[in-house]
Length: 358
Image 1: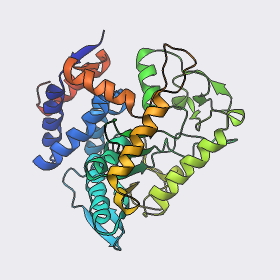
Image 2: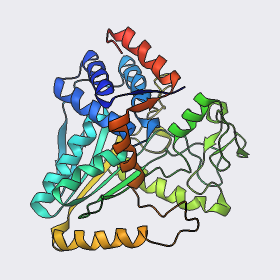
Image 3: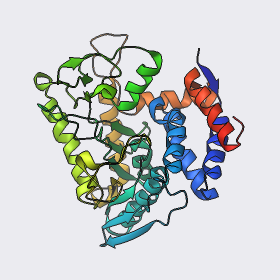
Image 4: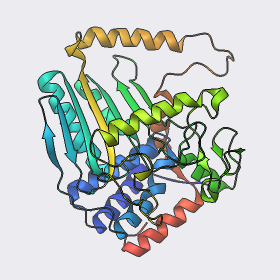
């Protein structure tokens, strides 16, 4: 049975955990906000369920709890940020702010990041642009769990893309999606629940379709968005490749099968060509194209038109990207965030190990 905890309870615990591993007060707050944004928005696979994973990376000396973040190359509209092996939860907001600041000055800002780690949900970082009347873009590469179309070998990560677009009276449009049929975190949830995965999520070590939630541990792979060639998995493969090149090759981070794995117990790839995990961020000022008020008025009309599209089933209306997350956030701020028993036990043990009461 799931238990519910208030946002503040989980935030306080998470912040103290990050302080316990040596983060500054500022970074611990930023990291906790980044991580808990996933739980609030209903992306349970990327929230506090992963907290112990970040700590294990620190214990393995793969995460620098007190990094020196710096710009190592820039132009008026672009920059490359060195994350100094810091928590991606901290590195990403820093880099996105650089993109926003550049957009304020010249209309758009584009920032690639090297030497970072897992940054949580991409949507959180893209949404930083919204209060500035800007469109935000965030993407990251990840460790190789995905077989390209026609391949057995894992070559790409789940490589998410997020785009946040402001509106006026309507909630903002926020698309945040993995370039695989399903994110690995959703696979982990089914593993904890001891349930099979839907068709089109994974393949076994021989490349055959599988419903085994543990397929990756047995040599299998996640599948690109589309699931198979008939479902246009080549398009998911292309999207994942674009993210990998923008995040890794462009920044000088690792890419393809050399991206460091999130689980600390998995050995690091050999002959790594770059530095850590890579990210890519963009910020575009609306008024670099047209007035923000006019744009947001039209966005309201766009959103209303799509919401009013005739549904196939009257009980399942058409939704706008970001709309379910707003519903989750409103509910969970009032009624609490649900955690599976396995996650609660994991957090309790983590707290005991670091002297932080859960």
